[in-house]
Length: 293
Image (cartoon, rainbow, N blue to C red; front, top):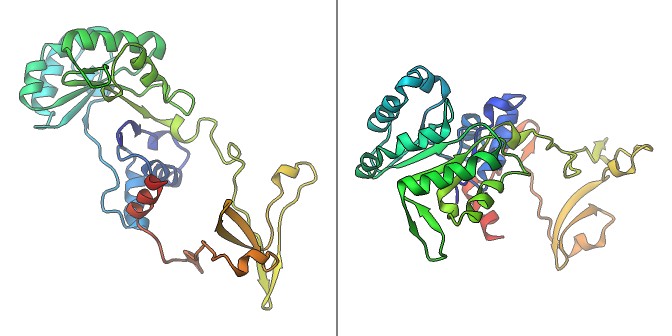
């Protein structure tokens, strides 16, 4: 399921750095991404040669340049010239009539199959609950299906990618719609643009922020913290912080006052000091640890 949620966010965020940081967080769990800044950052910082993969894909300006009267020709041309052998071609389908697009694309199923390929059809507008059920049903009717061991239908030679209106609240909706139709999750993909990184999701969503907690002056540690009278929930931790793995789970300990520090090793390690990165783990190591949890 590494391609179940694709990262289309780079064009919709506030900065290049936002694309890097948010995109690398996405890459911990997924390997499908069009976020080039994140892939380059993962290579530069986390020693991952190629953190993600994408596919040949069309977008609206490509389709509109053919004109609506030539849409069938454009589909044929893309399948013949852009779909790799045993590969994937993703085509935006709603430039004019998404439902007619599915019918037109199905005319080339034999060519798709002869290439060993998969055509990904992308509805890209309209209310998801109005559009996606019809597109899925038409694809099943026109492309055919096989039934898997869980008695769900897997579409032949085609997948449907919902890339419009996807955020943390709606990301499971395409799969739920497919389930209601008896269609397997293997036939559905989702992608998210601005909603993946910045749609009302920020550090306050999880009450999370980095704050300085300690300064050293003349060799003496001085604990520091913010403690606004107007919002106790923003009170930060003070002192030299340590992270301990105990029988109760991970706990933040404060040196030197917490007696547990004498018996429990600190899980934190220095990775950034005086402007330099060091002791960085690779992205593959972090992914492996995450998957084992």
